[in-house]
Structures are given as C-alpha cells and as structure tokens.
Length: 78
Image 1 (tube, rainbow, N blue to C red):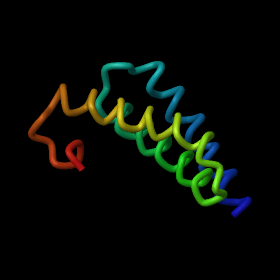
Image 2: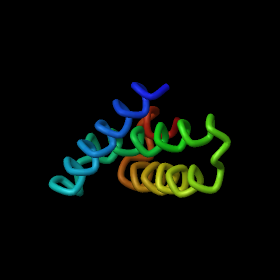
Image 3: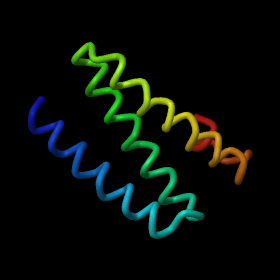
Image 4: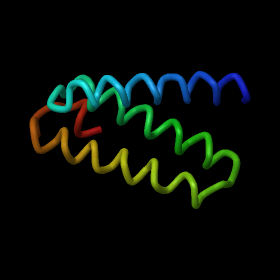
C-alpha cells in the first residue's frame, strides 16, 4: 500500500502541474481527474472519509467540466 501511495502521489503532482500549464486541455483535465479519484480511493480504503471527500468532489467537478466541453465523449460521461 505504501508503494501505491507514493506512486499515486507522484502521478497527482505531475497531472496537477500539467493541468496548471494547460488548463484548457481535456487530456490534462481528464488525467488529473483520475489522480483526484485515486487520491480519494486510497484515503477511502484507510477509512479516512473526511480527507477523501475533497478529492472526490474535485473529481466530480473536473468530470462536469469535461462534460461541458464535450457532452458526447463516452470517457467523460463515465
């Protein structure tokens, strides 16, 4: 689990920076949304629901942003 946390954190940091540099890129937004989800999932597995919730709220917000840009994209809908 510790290795997973390290890898997920590294991915989160990287996708956050890519999204910061490319705020209108749906690829960057999608990638960071996935990182938000997995950060929340790790905390959920640890039963740390209060800390997981903000990550999942960010995931939902990024998903809504993607749908607003391309409502026909099946990946974004899922």
